[in-house]
Length: 302
Ligand code: 13P
Ligand code: SF4
Image (cartoon, rainbow, N blue to C red; front, side, top):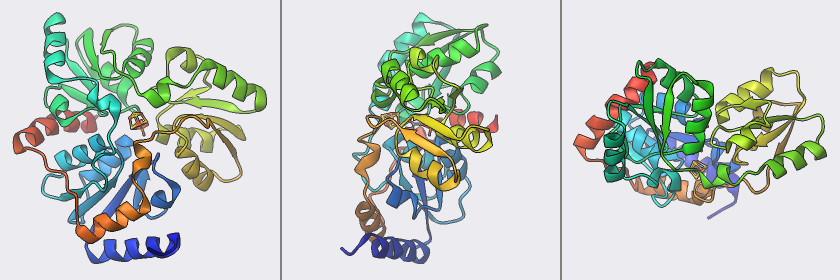
């Protein structure tokens, strides 16, 4: 197979030869981030995916991200190197359950976090990411909304938009939900000068301890512009690679337990194999694509 750098070179050569753009989420392993054309949060990657010039998108992230890229650029071939790299939270709500929740709250629009299946997005009024969830909910004229599937992100949105009633679906991200106040308090004790950044997929008691609540991309912007020199990173540890590369001279402390096993299922060798085979590809029903476009485009238009 060869050492890492020769595999990385082979990947870059093949991507150029086969007209492929490589998009990678901030939680991917460092050696994948380093060969990607774009590394970003869900919002950055969705925006990029609908505007690529290459004929193929190779998506290093979990299933729903690759599906969103396909829905936004259906004419492109979208490769997801390890289809089994799936976000468990995206599978915590099903269409039947959502339909009966709608019946319980008639007239309330459904705001769906992009961490959801294409089927659920097809039954959605507007999507959001962690970077724009508050903005999306504020933009709606209705006073009551249904928020699926992340109850932690929904609770955070509720705290920022007290004038509306946010009905929460009981889903969660196990990685962020498992971050505890004890862990943050211990990290603060170990690093008394550090500022605490946490992702809004964390529980509210953890969010209450933060100096900054932000998406992964927001954490990069905050740490770069802040006067602080040291930061506790309250999200999946993969982000620290980007922080250390792009915010030089500052110190970042990861939470050792915050690892998403699904994001880590994709290896550099899987990327190489996927490029050699030009697959596995993401295939979505044309009707689902059509019905995903509207809520995704509505979000991106904001
Ligand atoms: P963002 O990168 O959009 O902040 O999302 C975090 C996440 O958990 C994606 O799976
Ligand atoms: Fe899903 Fe959480 Fe992993 Fe993101 S970090 S892919 S939300 S399980």
